[in-house]
Length: 203
Image 1 (cartoon, one colour):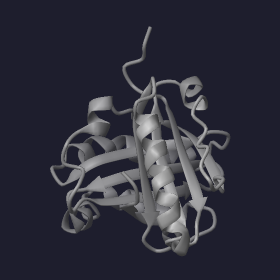
Image 2 (cartoon, one colour; image 1 turned 120 degrees about the vertical axis):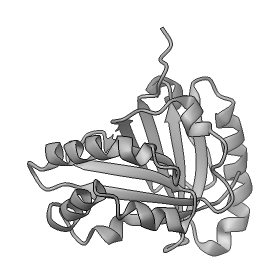
Image 3 (cartoon, rainbow, N blue to C red; image 1 turned 90 degrees about the horizontal axis):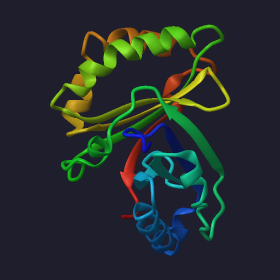
Image 4 (cartoon, helix red, strand yellow; image 1 turned 120 degrees about the horizontal axis):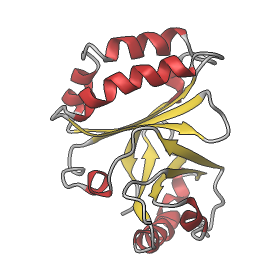
């Protein structure tokens, strides 16, 4: 039976000098075009890191990991990192692809490496926060995922209507305990160095 929701995600990070972006971009666009028409693909998008323009990220969601495995990037630059993950609060395909994710949308990604024994607490915090985040008109998309192969590592992928909406969500009551966790219960602080503000790279 075909799954209604994806349970496999993939993040690919490429390290490409900014001077080489123009040559790399058409190849990424072609890859995204092919992947979006592939069986089982939910979403495929690419971004640059505003703080480090050498980082180029491709964000994917698939209905099945085996289908994802059929689409190796095949780009002129090899991925510096390939991260497999499982979404802990899965979204439907419609939610990933809904309208309104362009224009002034602010896109963020945060990698979290919880201290030993703290992963369960972090999951509980996000389990409480997720319904609040997703019911906010200013938050277009919010996903919390666990990296495969390491029960203490997680990543959030977030899209906000604008910068104001991003700032406002930090003041939500459910955000306070998460911020406290990030400041006191992660390995290799501060958490900000694993926080990325993203800009669309190729379409």
